[in-house]
Length: 136
Image (cartoon, rainbow, N blue to C red):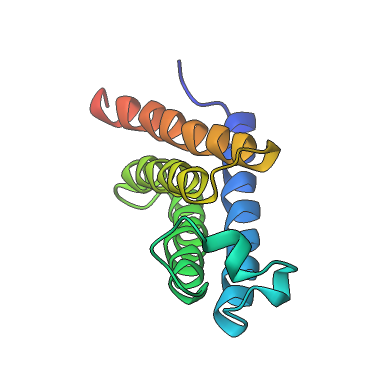
């Protein structure tokens, strides 16, 4: 299967939307590591995690998902070398983030399912592009 223009447009939009949401949430965690900016408390969210504030998770979310999604989208739009690897890596990072979030929070909700599926989509979509490059 070859990625269509529609599939690529959906992927690029998902990279930007996911990235912008991660930048906003991550920045909120960095600025207010207690969680009040997001309407949560550290005690309720981090009680089963190795963290004592949202600073490290916020920095991770901001950079590994937020910035990296935006960078991956730009590389994809411009079809820069190895953009397919960036998309696949972003999928692994996003899926990993969700996996550990579920473990640390000890809960699973619709957002976890949604972003887990998006992470899987990124990996699959990047793999499609990689196969095309290998056969070119």
